[in-house]
Length: 365
Image 1 (spheres, helix red, strand yellow):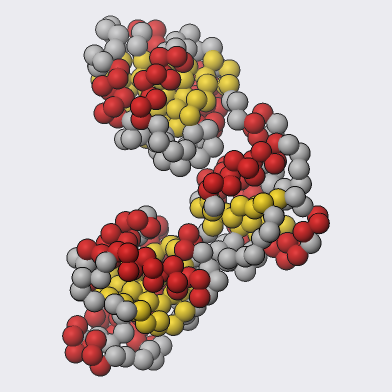
Image 2 (cartoon, helix red, strand yellow; image 1 turned 120 degrees about the vertical axis):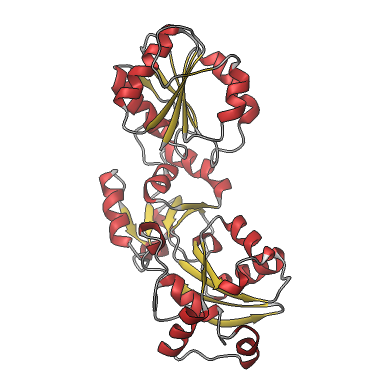
C-alpha cells in the first residue's frame, strides 16, 4: 500500500514525520510549512494543485489540517467509492483521526485506526455498520477480495443490516477456497451459512451470498463474487470489443455463472496485439495471458482437444479457445467447451489456483 501524508503547518509536518516512522506502508510526505523537516519531505506551494496531481496515485491520503479545507480540496476529484482512495483527516495536535472518504472499500476506516494508534489519536469513524458493530458486505468483500454485484444494492443491504432486519451471509461451498473464506469471515465475526439454506426464504429479509453462480432471488440480495472463471478466446482479426463482450456475457449465462467472476482471459500469442480483445480485457480489469503454439499444442494433445484444420493452417495450431482456457485455469476439464460466435470462439474453465498472483511463469500443461 502507498500513502501520502499532506500537512500545512510545521506542527503538522512534524506529526507527519512521526507517522512516517510508525507505519509499515510506503509513505510520501508533503509539507507546505518551511522548517527543519524530514529529508524526504516534498515541499508544495498550492494544495489544490498538489491534490490534483496526486489524488489518483495513492491508495490513501492522510491530511493533517482542518476537515473543511480537505472537503473543499478533494470535492472535484471524488468519483465513486469503488475507485476513490481512502481519505483520513487529522488535526495537527494529533488528537483526532477522522475517516472521511471510502471508509469500507477504500480502507479509510482501517487506515484511521492505524493512524490513530501510531500517534495516540482518537479514531473517529461514522459509517453506520461500524458504529453499530455490525458486519458489512463491503468490508467482507475487501478482506476476501470479492467483487460486489449488483453494486447498486449495497446501500440498501447495508441499510437493512443497520435497521436490524434479518440479513444472513451465505456461501456456495462448491467454490474454490470456500474453506478459506469461511475461516477468514469467522475471524471477522461473520458466520457464513451454507447456500442451500437460501431455500428457506421465510427465515431472512435480505441476503448476502458468496458465489459465482447466477441465482433467482426475489428478495433483496447482494452477491460477493469470487473470481473463478478462465476465459479462452480465439477471434478473427478486427473483432470488436463489443462483439467479444457480447460473447463473454452469453457464454457465462450458458453455464449459469456471473461475468463478474472472470479471473483471467487467455488466447494465442498471435492475438496479443488484437485491439478489440485488449480493449475487452481492459474493461474487465483482469489479467490476460497469451500462449505460444507449443504450449497450446501440448494441451491439445494431452486432453485430446478437437482441432480446426482451417485455424491450424492459419496460425499453426488448431484449437485456441479450449487450450488457452485450460492453461489459464491450470485445469483438466472445461465448464463450457468450444462455443462458436460470429467472429470468435470461446471456452471457459474453472480456476482453482490464481497462479499469476504468486509467480509470472507461464504455466505448462
